[in-house]
Amino acid sequence: MATTTDSLSTLRSIDPKLAAMLDHEAERQDSTLEFIASENHTSKAVMEATGSWLTNKYAEGYPGKRYYGGCEFHDQVEDLARDRAKELFGCNFANVQPHCGANANIAAFMALLQPGDRVLSLPIAHGGHLSHGLKPNFSGTFFEIHDYMLDAETELLDMDHVRDRALECKPKLIICGFSAYPRVIDFAAFRAIADEVGAYLMADIAHIAGLVASGVHPSPFPHADVVTTTTHKTLRGPRGGLILSNSEDIAKKIDRKVFPGSQGGPLMHVIAAKAQAFGEALDPSFRTYQEQVVANAKAFATGLTNHGFRLCSGGTDNHLLLVDLRNRDAELTGAEVESWLGEAGIVVNKNGIPNDPRPPMITSGLRFGTPATTTRGLREAEMQQVADWIERVVASGGSEASTIREEVRTLCTRFPLPH
Ligand code: DSN
Image (cartoon, rainbow, N blue to C red; front, side):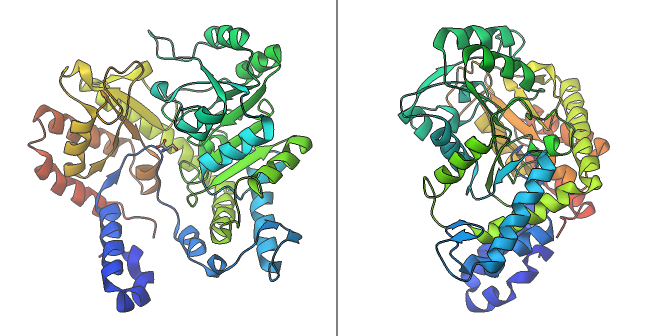
């Protein structure tokens, strides 16, 4: 049984049914390789804070201005989280209360826009996020969404095209920052376009926040008016959201739009865990970790390419890669290979590739990320090993998955989780 569950002794004695489910999940995480680009393994300290006394308390409002008594320690915790976030990202304002990245984006939209205002963003089918304008989402429901696309040949952002689209639709907000884009984002170029058309610029750095915090990817500051992010991907904190800005005026609006605009009581136990995670990210070792995340992604990209897999945009500069399966076999789907790899203990997600003819639940691609496996200590040699396993799984039409499952299990025992 994974050591992760040692803190469950009480639960195990009073609710063994639920405890068994959590034990099974701990065992799953311990014995599989997590290659989902948006996931990570937090430190034990982050998990302890998430499971702490602060879960018992309402703290609607902000430090010094709460709607409930008894918040003196919550004020200290939230101030600590805000101060560390500001130091980490080099900005003047932080709101640490958003429950998740989509909530952060709701508050940012509400702070910058009126319903019906025009927004220019990359659609989810090209690597954007559902909260950047997908029709069923709040963003696509209440705002007029216009899109820019990746270049059809290179699968890269084409800033001339983004500029043309901005000049055509005259948006009030331009969004950059993506969920499946493996390359560096030129925030200064986005700023220049936003200035030319009089738009706000929002950078959603949910995926690359850890790279940005450690200087491994350029910062969206001073270019973006608002920066939103999650805290649980490359940043390796608890599941949650964060909003950053340098503008006092925008910051005041964001605070109002988080609470009472779109949320009630903040998850103070999660905010405590954010404070801990930001503290960890301020340590110089975090940069070493992020550099290794990118080095591992590049090694993994090389390994897959050498096996004949096609990578969208030809490779990666960050923590993720997007594989187009069609050149291996036109019939292969992301759903099918995700399932085979899952049987082998390599956890990934099917992902549409740019201009994918298949629907999102099938797809022609897979997205891989190296943040979680880098956390547990895998390096370039193991990335090559995993690329070899993927080749064997695909070449055998999934039939070697159960054999490889045992090899993956053995590798995992050499790289224990951080708690
Ligand atoms: N669902 C996240 C991802 O996997 O990229 C984005 O919010």
